[in-house]
Image (cartoon, rainbow, N blue to C red; front, side, top):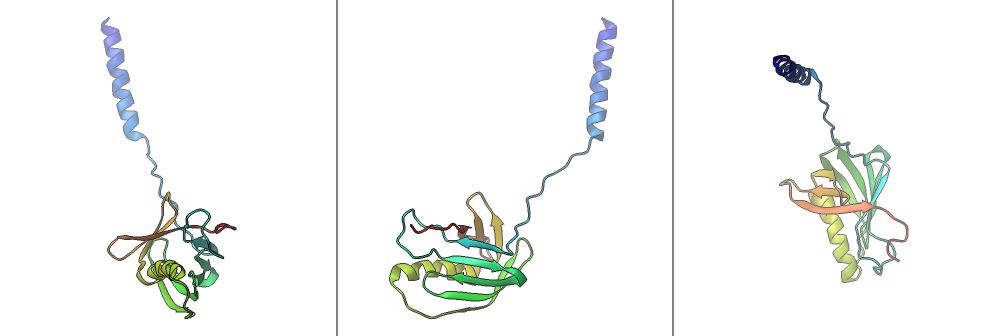
Length: 145
């Protein structure tokens, strides 16, 4: 009986020592890659539009987009988390109120976004205070139909 208790105590001590020696690995979140990706504004199913508003992150840190009414082009700086849109130019057409409302959402991203995270909802943009601005989803053909 005494040997059983000693063996149990030895096993417990040995497992504690081995647990302290084991290495632990932490999984880091995958960095967000924007280059050569297209992200669209999520719209309600069967929305009436020709094409959804979309941002195209091109190679060489170039940006293009269809904002809802107007087209945009420019550049962006991105380090995997922090983002800054630069030299953004847009066409200057006027469209109906529903298109301009969508465009305002896209322009807010281009004007105010400072960080980006990949969330369960999609590509989420945050302002300098960490407040969520908007989430874009991967571009899908036929999204407006």
